[in-house]
Length: 440
Image 1 (cartoon, rainbow, N blue to C red):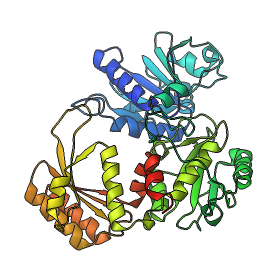
Image 2: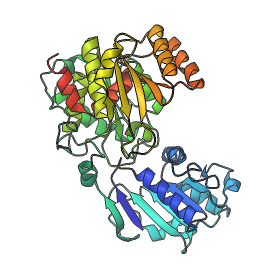
Image 3: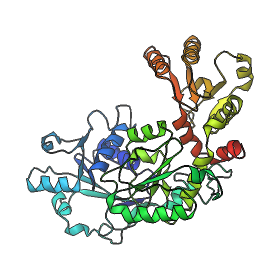
């Protein structure tokens, strides 16, 4: 059977839940997950293990996820989800060490694949159930018509993917500001383009388009720019080729953002977006660069250093409200200068669990150790279900970070929303950028 889902719309979660359901019901005993690239295989193992699929963990204590590596064939056992690349699978088949897989998931089915004639198909056997996931409709019909299709239009309508042209909601929260070519920041900050060697022509054409729009584009490279400075932008070009040698992992992305570099992934050809970049709002430029220009405009406007403490606190309060927190202004006002700026309650949207109450600090610049220590003491005195939160446009000092780590060990939880994370949250609500930064 074939399932078609747009890039970034949750294929990984659907695969994980499907495998868990098949194992739990007994319809699958020996499932195999096949992907074309090693990087995607490693990513899927991590994502499947991180999914919350029941009280016993990912796929239950008896249902584990195994990444196939050279010499690890003996570790494959019943009830284990084996994740492998197509080349690894063929190599294992040639050595005759292949168990009988009863369910096979094919990720990113090639549009030109003549499935029945492939070595993989011959090795699986006729009795196996084959589920083929793809981000677009393949031209052939060797696996039949899709049993489920969730295309880009549906994902945009549901707000799953970012649409820079069309409002997905009744308010303006899903719409980035229009591109202003006369904005002086575009000629002041540099935009670095990074992509795989195979995408060189695509990257060069993108550079031409951006320069024509007035963007200051630095030389494109196949690596991370070492001289990127605060305010610069790193655009990571995503395509099937770049997935084999991903430029940015989560650690590198956070490192760039801590340096003040804006990381913007763009999709030039529909492909599986790595998990570490999916959270950074990949921009679809398959039909032109207007979306990227809007995203660059939003990033240029979002200068957290321009806000004074009062305006910053107001922005944090509005953002928390947008994220589902419900503040108590009358209580917060009575707190005064006690180390707490906002008191709010967060309840799961579906109403499950106990509502969590937060004591929140909103700090411009680095939060001092004194501020953090005071908040920890207040949360400790409040007891359960209270938690703390520090929201800053900068970063915590290392001393403050260690204080929070010690507090967590003692059962006092204080979450941190630093500058890079705050930027990421605000980019999901561009109307707040327009309201709080235009003309400032």
